[in-house]
Image (tube, rainbow, N blue to C red):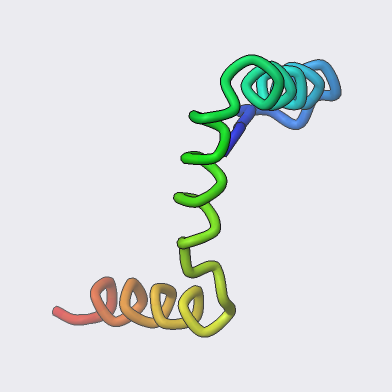
Amino acid sequence: GFTFDRYESGLLLDAVNRAKSLYFNNRYHWDEVVQRDMAKDVSWTNSARQYKDLYLELTQW
């Protein structure tokens, strides 16, 4: 994906411009990024499992 480390409009615009540049200038790599990111499990079920696993890890002595 295309990230930025602070919630600032200029940084968001930079991320959008990086995405546009990749889309228009390197379509092959763009397609790879899309395929990789669409294969990720971003479901609530997966998020809940990760949260639960972390909680259990932190609370076990």
